[in-house]
Amino acid sequence: MFFRGRQPEASIWRRFRVGGDGFTFAHEDDHYTAHVVANAERVVDLFYNLTDQLPPAVDVVMDDLRSGRSWKGEAVPLPDVRESVARLKILLARYGGVELSVFTGEDQLTLNPYLELFIYARTDRWLYLLEGKGLEEQTQVQPKSWKTQRQQFPAAPDLVNAVTAAAERLALQPA
Image (cartoon, rainbow, N blue to C red; front, side):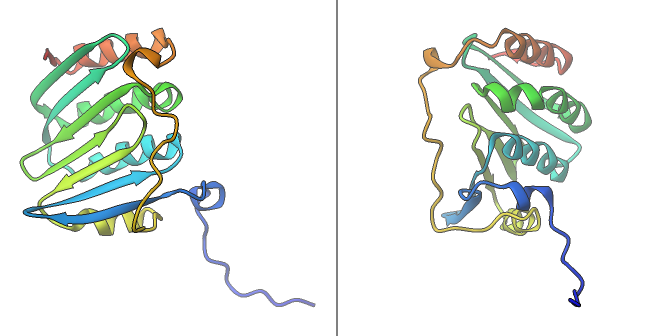
C-alpha cells in the first residue's frame, strides 16, 4: 500500500512546457527589462494575460511585417485592446510576423514578430508577476532560432486580414 501526500497542483504549462521556458530580468539605468521565451501559444497567452495589469487606457502600436503596414493609437481603452488580442491569439501563435506593443508611461509589453515577449517597466513588479505565472528566471534565455527576415515569413492572409480588422476596430491610425 502506498501513501500519497497532497500533490501540488501542476498547471498544464508546467507539464508540457519546453525546456527553454523562462525569462531574464535586468535593471538598466531607470528601468527594468524582462525577456520571456517559451512556446508560441504560451508567449501569446502570457502577453494577453499580462495586459490585464495595465491601466484602463493604453497606447498601442501594431506592425504587420507581411503587409508592411503599421498602426498606432493613444489612450485606447484596455478592454478593447484585450478583446482584439483575444481574437488574434490563435493566428498570432500560429504564424507570428506581427509586432504588438501595449504601453503607458510606466510599462510596456511587446510581443515581437518571432513570438518573444519583452517587458519594459519603471518598477520590478513584473518579476513577481512572471514568477507567479510559473516561469523561472534564468541568466540568459535561448532566443528563437528560426528568426527570419520580413520577406521570409510564410503567407498568412487570415492573419493579415485579422490584424487589419483589429486596427480598424481599435480606431488605430496608420503609422
